[in-house]
Image 1 (cartoon, rainbow, N blue to C red):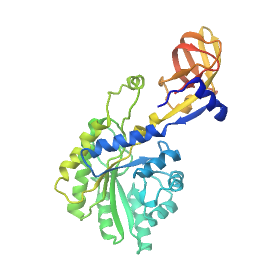
Image 2 (tube, one colour):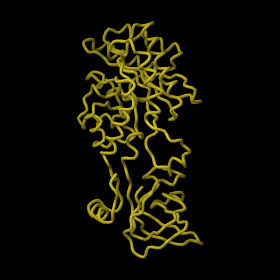
Image 3 (cartoon, one colour):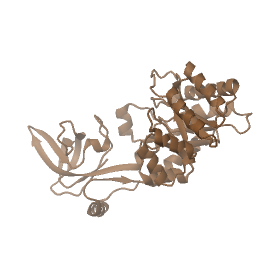
Image 4 (cartoon, rainbow, N blue to C red):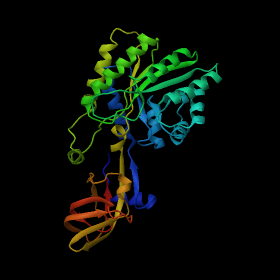
Length: 361
């Protein structure tokens, strides 16, 4: 990522003002390709469904589309962004526990995939299929199963429940409904749970094949992946250093072993968001005032903690010297522009600072 100098900051602020986001799409693309390569090393039939809710900047989603990835959306707005960015319906996967029925019908009839989250949603999809017998309906099922992470997720259908079997039987009975994928979501990002993710999904696939004769094209084991991050942030979050390989070895290897003698096996998919988007973005704002309140140095910036969404954490921050009368401070708190008492972007900053300096998060 290119370093920001006083000269670069001056040009940017002249055009965009004193507070803005910077996107480095090359970093995003590099992250995407590294993640893809890590999984393909062990299981070549692999693809990515990018989580739009993480960052739906059109330039980023166009990169995903160019590289052959899918759009994983959860709202009308995200679907609109995908379509306006050139994504074909066939490469849209609609997730989420509550969906707009009119848009779901539109996506289904134009070749997209809708992952149902309940039996009620299946009943609606089945009604669409019955009303449109000449159209193949691409259906996904969100699966809820235990991976030993101590979390009972609110998403998906319990794969041990009668409802799950009812749905599979219903799909089997519908001539124009095609089960294209199973999908699952898990809350915790630690690689240690990814073996159970893969094993659980393969168990569900085995059940669908043997008991119902259903062979989904894709098996999606969700997102929740740690991406590259500075040690300052990692240490505060108490996260051990992990890489994409750590996830791939636990999940893709299981798929490779299971399907080693299978012709045309399903595609393994994951749904990364922050893992590939987070470090491609920077937020820039300017120091507007510095004051001493009862012995405490407080600098106020024209940005807010709400712009970086990192509460109670000192994010990696760079100070670009653009101001005058800069002084050395031992423990300055940098506050945001809102009237929220707790709005601090950084606490306990030690170093030189002056009004007119720019902060890069």
